[in-house]
Picture 1 (cartoon, rainbow, N blue to C red):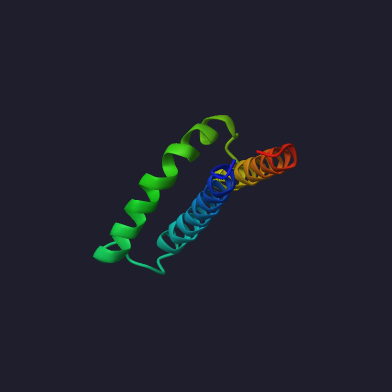
Picture 2: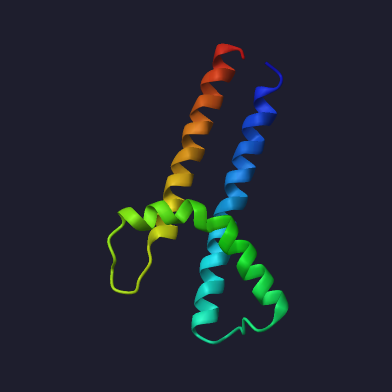
Length: 102
């Protein structure tokens, strides 16, 4: 079917954008904690809050499962790996559907 190819492509692009949002959120968090950027700056505060609201709902359940490593939060890495796995599954489903003639 003609609609499946664009649908799968949009899903993969959305996952890629979400992965970049997770990476940028993690880097911004490090920069804030090390004092490189100041959260009193309205732009930095707005970007940080937006990224937190965007990524936190997906990271929070992973934080409950992943053990505490003494100040090191690996939940963004786990989420990125899960999203990469999801991209691979979507790609395999897409290829199977294309071979089947959908």
